[in-house]
Image 1 (cartoon, helix red, strand yellow):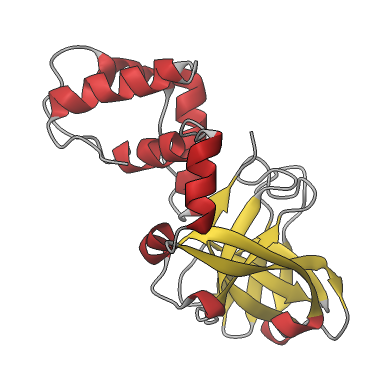
Image 2: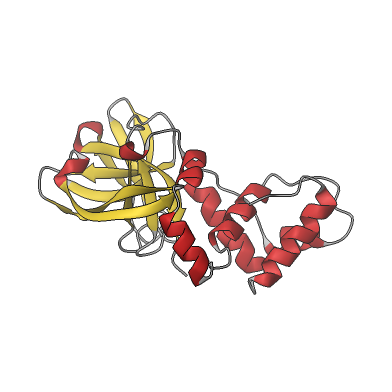
Length: 227
């Protein structure tokens, strides 16, 4: 999605795209914040900030605009049946394997321990923007339960990059195996041998675990939501 670089054009662009989707400024703020959280950023974005930017006279591009663009792009108008046919046969898609992290047939320390559910066609150009890793080193999984609410909802789709398996970034979201069970959690290193396993849902307690009990299957680099 092309994002205007002129502040006045961006102001009108946000309003027109928001209204085309029937969203309030509050709805847009929440959707943009969900993308920011998935990217490891705790964005302070409110409906007042969006409403203010939509008013005439904007003088600079706000730092949160890219997350707004992600929210719009996820909810882009559905293509027609003819466009879907063209897209399905075009050479700009790549088949990503889809994995069920809730069902392990092994110790859970390797992605091959988990049941494959088939493949999911994904836009190759978009994938190249999401990660530099080749398609055979990423996989698609579904969120389960509400422990990561509001960042993730039940059955949200995520793309996991298995080339990123070192906890070198704090508070990012990872696909993990914890005591042999698959999960998607936010992680924070809190010592040489300790990791805090964080649930974004405030009603779910975080866990402090030994580093040797947790295996990183890969980092979550994209989140998609069915509407």
